[in-house]
Image 1 (cartoon, each protein chain N blue to C red):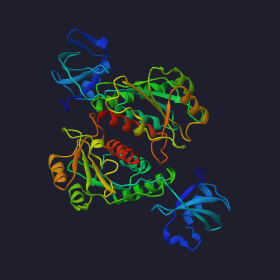
Image 2 (tube, chains in turn green, yellow):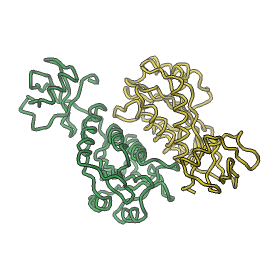
Image 3 (cartoon, rainbow over the protein chains, first blue to last red):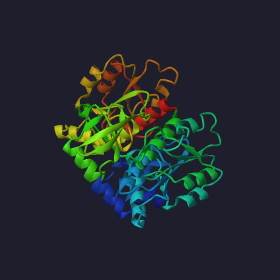
Length: 242
Length: 242
């Protein structure tokens, strides 16, 4: 199964056992992936479902529903202060591979970048590509960038596991603060926030704590804004898979 | 202290309380970092020691020895199958930030790239820069690339904690295999190997296991060759800091 190519298909393209392919998808399957008539591929709906499909002209025949076990037992939202430069592309790509559910870019007090709308499209395309490459059943959602304070205040208060990472200050290590295995029955959602170059400001941390976030450390070394979300996500996914 | 600039100084440059700066260092301090006469900076010997120093012409006066607590209580050697393209630059940069002690690039059965000697110099420069940026007291060693098999066979047999990461196969999770806190007294060294695009070959894994490596998983998703070492290192450093 690992050798089959995977592409994302919208649910609206399904008609009974047929998938109506778009011109872009036909081009991608034929010209880029070099599939020929009757070749098989995997259709993903980006929401956790996979189907084995067979190319027949401008459509594809659904052969069977596949079971996938590559997703985490927890939904992880990463709130990330936008780093300067193009570093966010790599963050989106790597975090998608590692298993993120939702990426919420934010502007913080120290954020220099205010991204163009084209950026959001670009990040979503990178997330879709990375989900395919890493055999995920799920394409992460990328939210529109908003101010950090409004994101913190808008996050559902029912989510109990909320963390804000900060290098300075004497906070406990994230790995020590995650809900332990066996105590997770009502903890199917987790939110974690990582800061910009220079870190969060004091008011940002205080506001997040007031909104139910726990301040945590990612270790004693100072990580760049593009590295911190990758390290945080590596720790969370490992803790939930053991 | 966090605001002071840091540069790496060879021990041979120290003469009693003076540091004899090289023309490159004088240029870097003056032109790049914009330091002026009598400004202070941190001199690191790249082996775990920091000094507070003051610029005086073409020398620097050592004012005091600093204590640093940013290093891990374990020495971590990462054996990494060289990925294709320029991805290894980022691996060196990020793994240095996260806290690696030694990076050992290897050619595996499926490695496409055979790096030029210039690459090694480039990686060592990146490691030195990243160590400075992330306030590490230690510049990681980058070994010359060798064949994976010879690296595995040359690693000291006294190192007990040796892991080889592999996506396919039903191996236990790395986080479950690391020595638990309290059982680490004789485990000051750890070696972890991550594979190339397409993974290790069967003979490579068998050979590593025969040399005392334990095969482990980094989770259920398939990670790229450049992502796997970052995830592995994030997990190891977290486990040793809690």
